[in-house]
Image (cartoon, rainbow, N blue to C red; front, side):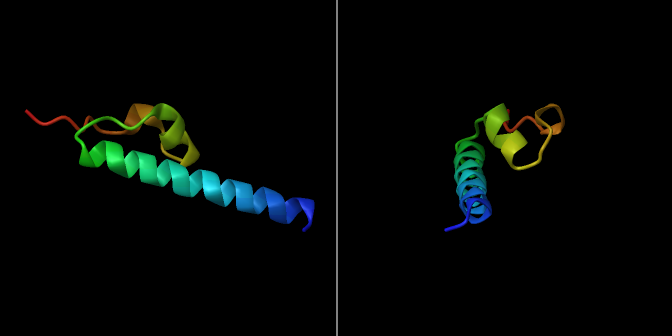
Length: 53
């Protein structure tokens, strides 16, 4: 497998993992980790507060 293909697979895995973690956090009324948001291309400063109340 070429180096670029391995990089693509690694990046795809990172994005899927970050999306899963961020979705679970939002579902649990928690703020996703900044690292996960950045991996998804979202600026953590612009992400709305997910707490209700």
